[in-house]
Image 1 (tube, rainbow, N blue to C red):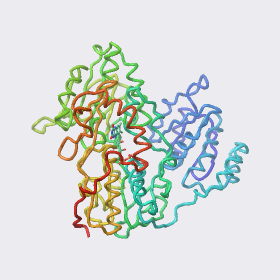
Image 2 (spheres, helix red, strand yellow):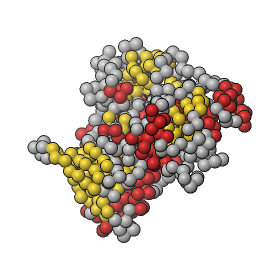
Image 3 (cartoon, protein in one colour):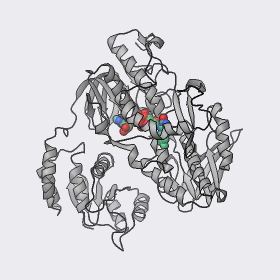
Image 4 (cartoon, rainbow, N blue to C red):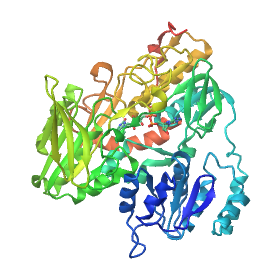
Length: 570
Ligand code: FAD
């Protein structure tokens, strides 16, 4: 092995072998980035072989293949994300190390710690044996952009934690109302995803790329983007701490950090995700693998799992199942495929009105419904999954099922830094009043989106409705108004029961049906073509160009419905 240091804890080398991995782990390498596409040379080890061995040794493994001469800006951003988030020391490799060194050099423009000058970057690469002089103009140009300094302790009137669907929409709604507000959004990711599109990627309707945009392009013009991760909340001091140790203080805090996917709670799962027929539409990089598996499956057993609630988009596990069933039905192979829906819960869908129409599709795709079955363990190479089945007396037994394809919806919970914060309720979610989205203990904190404690369906549709409510209430708070807007718990779940038809579930607190359209136009309890057109053609542009830009179509709070504020938190 010919390993060279590039900077700090980042190393580079030419192609490594599977045998090298034990030595690398022994030397303390904790993350490996493979930048070489499979099949460039006859005896080159396959990425899956390296991944399996690395993960067995407890080493994180990332596959970011770069075809020579075809490195894109997205590749650089993804590499920078790994440098920013993965534990070090990190080793990146390709055939000779040149592509990895190039990625590292350009990633300096995007990393939080991107403190190196163009000259230093080129010199470091040179000391490691790589000539990057051709990158000099690009690196020098980037050097002039004042974005790389670590965040010093600073203050903003409004700080939003999380620039996902809810955070960006709230910032846009606030600025629509008061364009001069001083707002900072703390968001670590360079890339933003339209997650509702991943079901469509898994069904072969969208490509993954269609669901991805650069965060920078979506940030509201008048908001300050702080590209960092929040690590702690200090609500008594009105500050948040960032991972680099600096603090940002605020007058009002809006928390919208989403939720975390707990794939690691299922034994054996992480080592096999993305191979051996095991997939999940809950991850950007795996949704296209779902579609690959669906197209290749001609006979056998396909299992679709659903963990205990709450999860984001509670319909997504079965949406994946219906779209797969529809493909197999249309290809004439459904009679050779056994579909199992293993649901930790006890019902097909939480709101009764939609169940009869869904049951028609359960019958059509000859699906076996297995309720109270919770996935606990997966053996990918042998294609076996284990479930805990709880009977009505609470007695638990283990059920073993073989599969050819396994689509997983992972268990989900509040992010760790929320669970351990003073903002959390007893089970970890941010403790807010369900109507005002105002924190129940801290009068200058609001929360919305997947991370908050409200008992609505955790969906982008809910965030779309919540954002203008929070914007209205934050402004009322800042300006001392004595009324506030009220959130009714609206959420929506477009159930893709077949390619071209959707059952459009729209409901609020307590399962109250809250349709956006009159029944004669669109009856959400029936599969309709119109709802499909909405999902495929209308909702994505409505998200990028409407919701994230502060255009509040169908969700603008009506001042007539505002109610007097009795601020118990004061
Ligand atoms: P996110 O959009 O996940 O954003 C959270 C942000 O917080 C992220 O950008 C993250 O980087 C940031 N963050 C995390 N940690 C930190 C930190 N420490 N410091 C600062 N920032 C941090 N919804 C629908 O309405 N309809 C659908 O059809 C639908 N289908 C779905 C299908 C799938 C497969 C999935 C996965 C989701 C689906 N959803 C759907 C749900 C929807 O995408 C989410 O409910 C929505 O994105 C929630 O928005 P959010 O802002 O709360 O979280």
